[in-house]
Amino acid sequence: MNTLQVSETPAALPPEKDISDFKQKVTHWLRIDEEINELEKKQKELKKLRHSLEPEITGFMRQFGISNLQTDHGKIRCATRNTKQSINKTNIRDNLSKIIPDMTHVDQAISLIYGNREVTTSYSLSMSRK
Image (cartoon, rainbow, N blue to C red; front, side, top):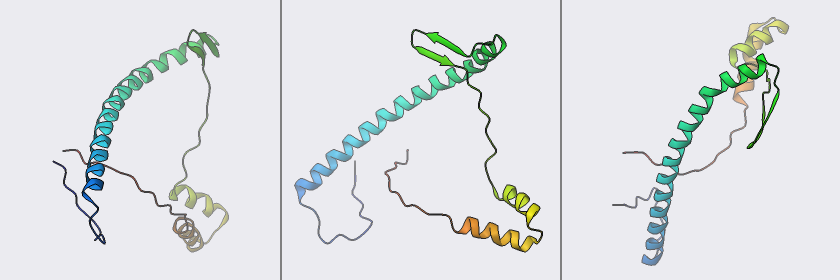
């Protein structure tokens, strides 16, 4: 069933009780993970359905000048949001070249921007599906 693979050589094996507790925790984690996956599938289906209804609702509200709709479940607001395109190397290069005529300086600036980004390390559990 579950096998223990050690990636680094431990100083000594833990006591049998600790291993048993660890196995129980892993089994519990796996059951919870399975339940989360089932709920996420259902949530994904519901969000897809809600998303398909949204253009019709917002279109109706915009057409008739309805900005807020009071319902039994709370207020639905039809908000307008303008978003800017994400920044990428091409965008940076194009805009820097407008103020810096020397393309080697532009390329150096881009290398500096991308090379000096902060790196954060985090750890999480993942499971490969069979």
